[in-house]
Length: 101
Image 1 (spheres, helix red, strand yellow):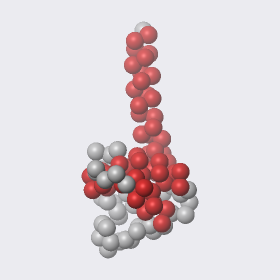
Image 2 (cartoon, rainbow, N blue to C red):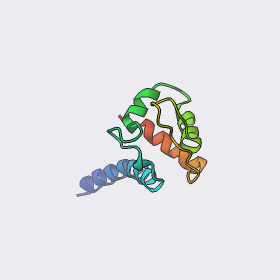
Image 3 (cartoon, helix red, strand yellow):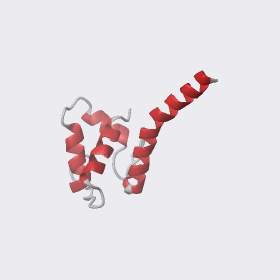
């Protein structure tokens, strides 16, 4: 019984950050234009993670784009600035996006 509870606790603790960051992305309206595994208006988070894989400053670049917006990287549709996202939230979202495989 203890082993089962420990396994369950470890599984839930590993899933909780991923779900929390998906919840943050949803609450900040990121999911209106993005999805984890398919293009919506903007690229999927898996595509973003693949594009920035191995770049040391990727999380900082993405956090800046989340806050200020950007254009030209993924085509003609610009990403608008997200004034409702603060710096800590942008960093958390960027780190989460980069974990999508």
